[in-house]
Amino acid sequence: MAAVFLTASFGAPAGFPADASITATIGYALIGLPDLAGAPTESFLAAFELIDLVLVAALVGAVMLARRDDGSILPLKRGDE
Image 1 (cartoon, rainbow, N blue to C red):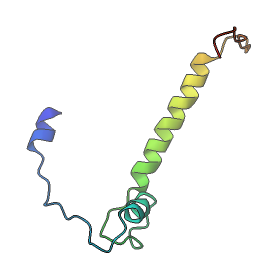
Image 2: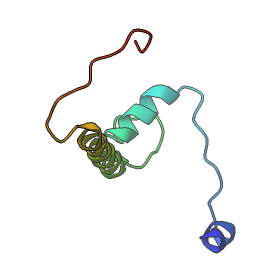
Image 3: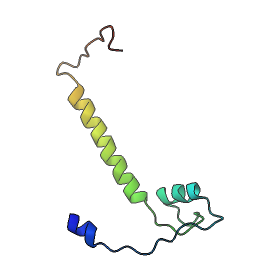
């Protein structure tokens, strides 16, 4: 993996035009509306949704691991709040 990162070539950075809103451009790129962005971007909707699915699966897994076998929950002791 280190060889891939060390030998990867990247294009020259384009930057943002002076009149473009950086926040709006990033937002439009994340939700898949690059035509509305103030600067040329790529759509990150697929990556955004993939990360969403991974985080939801991790959350469900954490809840399943934290649950007791009989479904009960231990009461909090004083000082654990």
